[in-house]
Amino acid sequence: MDEGRADRTCPRCGRTTAPRDGRALRFCGTCGQMLTGAGPSFTSFGATPPAATASLLLGLFSLMPFVGVVFALLAIPLGLTAASQIEASGGRYSGKGMALTGVALAAAATLLWVSLCCGGWYPA
Image (cartoon, rainbow, N blue to C red; front, side):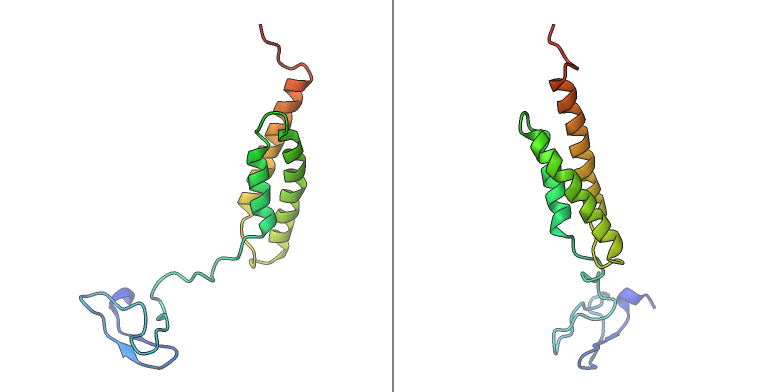
């Protein structure tokens, strides 16, 4: 029988629930416990460190004219630190892509602003 349609036993109270309308219940009717195999586990993904989120936001803000270089100079080390924390956490943290995207945006913005300020572009 398909796992999504099989009877399920509550791990907390031991009550067995039968499927309704061909679909298995997600929660125990007695104690409210989420039943095994009832859906995705939200604890299976690690938390995202605030430094990764800050790196992404600062990377986006680094695209702003004039003050973008300041944001970029903050985003690059913050994102690299967050990425190394995520690697060292052994799966407890996630969000490495977010941190590295912030670093990439900040690096691109830095190159853009430095080239514009150092004579890389002259209006005709």
